[in-house]
Length: 196
Image (cartoon, rainbow, N blue to C red; front, side, top):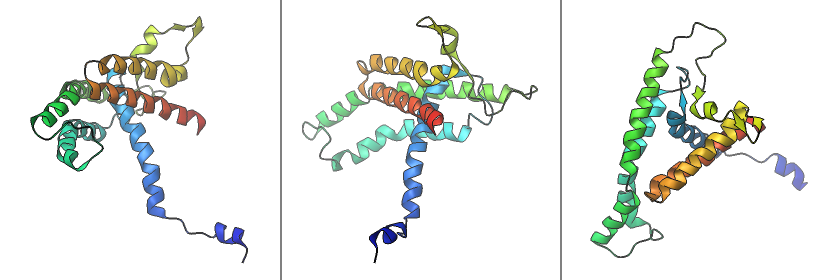
């Protein structure tokens, strides 16, 4: 039998395909949510989902607890020895995590209230609008050229957040890494929109 025919008639694992397509979309969506509550305002009512916001709040609340729960089962996780030093190490690792949780919760709640108050009378506006960028007001000129909204979404906003994450990294490692990773996926999600 011709091997090319068999390769074309191969069965696909539908569940695996769904899972592999869902993981990047979740990373993109929640990374954008984590940063957009701080760098955008006046989001559309259908763009800013309270369910996604609540899920992110729960993730930020329980992630350190989850790491403490699974910590003994991972041998690759850096540990000195059992006892109080493990707890001290994890406390240093997640130092500042709940500050991020509190600030995100407050900023997200403010954005949610903004999205509820925004009444759309002008039909050119959409209730799925990603909002107005705070950074766009300050980056009117960039290297002598006008900055397009696409450049702001793909380059300026993520690099601004990445630099903030880099500064925070020196004070709270886990929070800084989270913000830097979120800014990378934030940029990647908008590049994906441009390419795909």
